[in-house]
Image (cartoon, rainbow, N blue to C red; front, side, top):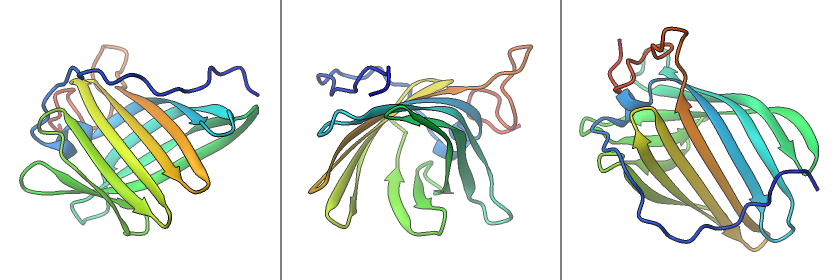
Length: 177
């Protein structure tokens, strides 16, 4: 077992939210990521710490969501990362896809809170997105299935430069510069 506190489900609490009229504009830029991971069936646990960058993909209007960092799982540490694609829609919502283009889930942050479900073979991924400020959002994934009972919780915080300015591509209000 690692020294990370096991992840347990929190009781439902009404989230404090920050409405986001345009998901792609809000997410554009660089974020720190702190994630706890827990296997609720076995007690195995871990963390992911790194960065997430939302940046334009080459010429197609999409954003790439690229995460890179260090994963510690059940006492073992390795580099880890993932890439997703964000396909903005005119109404400020977006569709999220895997790097290879397969659909993952819709995303609507206009109220500052969004829940979604992604079926994958016999497993079910239930996601909750909560925007808490112009510079912070939370994501929780609960995965259940015949061989899975997992909970992942992430906190994303906008990275800022030495003078307090947002880094790379965003002014902190979700408007690209």
